Every structure is written in C-alpha cells, then in structure tokens.
Length: 180
Image (cartoon, rainbow, N blue to C red; front, top):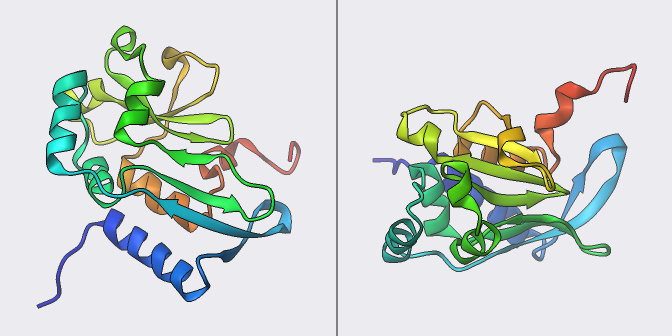
C-alpha cells in the first residue's frame, strides 16, 4: 500500500532531494532569465506540544496544513543566493510571536513569512469562519487591513512558491506587456 503524504511533506521532501543530489546547492532560473545558485536551510521540527503551547499562549489558530509544515520544519530560509544571500524566511513559532506582538489589534491576523519586502499573512478570522482561503499578502510597512487575499491556503501557496523557485508568483498578474 502506498503511503499518503501531505502536499507540504511531498514538496519539502522533493526540494530536499534536489538539494542533497547537488551538494545542498541548486541552480534556479529566476525572472528575466537570471540564473542563481541557491541553498535552503530548514529548522528542526516543532513538536505537537510546542504547537499546542503556541496556540494556547497566543490565542491564534494555526491551520492544519501550516501545522504540518511546522512539524517538518519550524521555519526555514529558502532560495538564499550563495553569493548575495536572500530575503525569504518562513518564520518559526518563536519568530511569529516576536514579529507579531501587535496581532491582538488585528483580529488574529499574523505574519508567517517575509519575502523580499512582502509578508505572507494568515487570517485566523477566515479559519474560524471555515473559509479555505485564509492567506493574504501585504507589503512590509502596510497594515493588516491593507492585506490582499491570495485566494489560497498554505499548502497551495507553499507548493507554488517552491515550483516558482521563490519568486512572488502572486504578483505576476499585475504585470502586462505594457508595464513590465
């Protein structure tokens, strides 16, 4: 019998396999044809107890697919250019607390990632209303009420983010032949 694994687990496993096959560095093609040699760093997993303690301490709801990620890697850095570094970080539980000390003001919205001056945000209100699309994005200086719906959950966003090699695919529809 074939073991069913979550999309998050399969995505991380495949990325780690590519990294292992290439000495923990892979070459990716970015936008406008640029090639980069990058590495990814995964934190140790969070335990079920740590996740439960986080939810109890903060009162924030963590979606199941995001909990799956945390149980594999309690945060990570993705697609850091070997020569120039990078700005892609999915936060650990401790970092979520550190970087979201204002979350009470915004009805359970909290940043979970920083990607080239954008933040990926979980809207707990959407989770409590059983909405499947609970991820938003905002600029690093924007307020939570200015966040734009991504119309997806974490596992869909994460899978697409890895497939796009760390590019902000959610902004692609903004550009046309006239303004690119």
